Amino acid sequence: TTVLTGVPRSSEEQLSRAYHLLTAQLRQEHAEVRLSAFQVAEELFARSHLFRLLVVSDFQGFLELTLGTDPRQPLPPPREAAQRLRQAAARAVQGWSEKFGAAYKKLALGYHFLRHSQQVDFQDVNARTLAERKREEEKQRRLDRIYRERSEQAVREMEEMSGDIRDCLTEVDSCFQLLVPFDLGPHRGAVAPAVASGAPEEGPPRLASAPDLGDEEQPCCSKSLPACVRRPVATTGASSEDEEEGEDSDQEDFVRSHGLGSHKYTLDVELSSGSLRVQEDEDNCAVIQSARDALKLIQNKFLPAVRTWVQLFTRAGTRGQHLEAAIDLKAELETALRRSQELDIEPEGPRTRETAALGDEDEDDGDFVEVPEKEGYEACVPEHLWPEDG
Image (cartoon, rainbow, N blue to C red; front, side, top):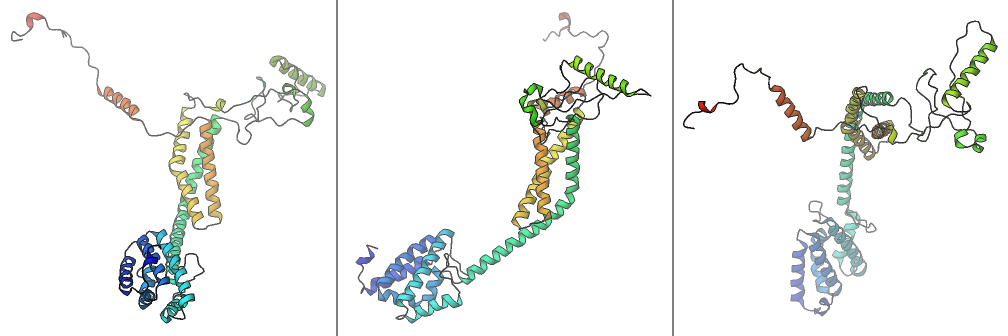
């Protein structure tokens, strides 16, 4: 600006040359270059009547290069600079029309053309033209159509794979039930009641319920909990008194054998996360292997697919049973993986190189056949039988 103030307003030759140089810069396929050229042109337009005449003489071309009014020739990249150029040009044209519109008819006509024919919203921050708004709307419709088609495809995939996913979850849950035959899911701090060794098994042990409010005054080792499991006594025609005596004797035997001192409380056994780790042995190796195979399917196939479905349904704006079903499946799959980590049962991964090399060596050794030693065979040749040449 300081340099431009020194340019004489009546220097027609210099202003004409500056106009052509700036027009050439405005034709460059780079928004930063156009923005710099427009800023110089805006300063000269405000100071020189001759420069205003030169700009107004080809005002339509000037608008195409600065506002991008021609849909066949949009503003060049970068996008941020093009947006700043469009905003600056819209503000300038509006200010020029208010200040110089009465003296320059082409300027007033150009502003009217932008406002009504091109439907440029000068109040819009981006000052987009009608063609630009149509292009963005068309682009958005195309994206919506793509997301809608992908969402429909995801619905078909989910209907095809839901059965397999449910079967896989059922298999994993059955394996967990066989390995840990009691539920620790929602109650991490719950405990299992101690059962007498002589009592018959009546299904998996249940978790002890919370103590009553009256038990808060007692120490933690003497809290009154529900009565222990009683062993049923078979009676054939015995009287009620014999039944009571038998029950009393059973309770006394239970208390005496376990050293409890009273049958009105149970032992609290706290199970930490480390105690839930499953140790693989010959009895449960088949169950653990089945769980690993199912967990591998969950980790590598089912869970990535379900996460993709949730993203597609969300982007497509689907708010219905399909999105809810996908979210529920995702939660169940992630829960199965978390339980596998608690039990220290990781999905079976690819075989490492060392393991593969050891396996190959075993296979190579297995190809050899043991041959019995030949009668009269001497491993060492006597010296007198060595050849003379050595």
